[in-house]
Image 1 (cartoon, rainbow, N blue to C red):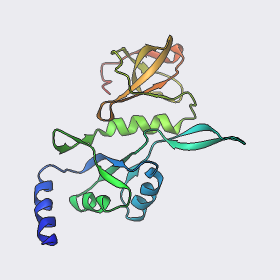
Image 2 (cartoon, one colour):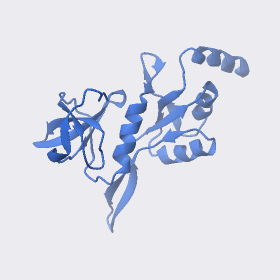
Image 3 (cartoon, helix red, strand yellow):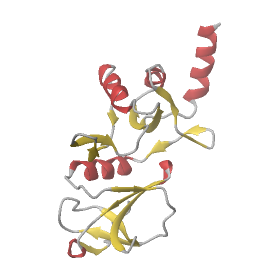
Image 4 (spheres, rainbow, N blue to C red):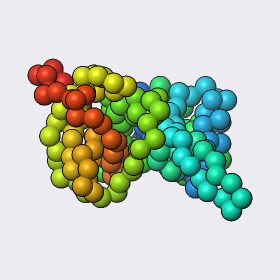
Length: 188
């Protein structure tokens, strides 16, 4: 009976899972464990980590913390990989929209990789709904070539990257001299 159920799920899932990036929701503080398990079974993944200062009673230390706690991005090549990932201890489910597993655009993953690859300490994550800002193009610095929104947030000008699927906003400090009007070909 279990094999039959598995086959039915396989047939139903095949209709709407195509190769691409997806988001796994995990148990709290299981992101790195899941990342290691994904490496072990050769599934491409991305866990955005940022250096964060943690204070303990006897010391302070910078640690690598997930940018989005309880979320891990995975690139699934086929339906078998989907089922393999669900068997990993600590994986709860795939993020869904409208009853279907939600995919993440390659450009979103690329932008996140740019953000975490650069040693920016002033990264802030916001759950607030932020009004659209002016779309600009970064012409110099570690994020050259990146399209972004520039907004006013808590009285400061910030660079904003929206992650609609997770309902999160990433806010960074950026010098105004590094920005220019958006070229026609820029769509993020």
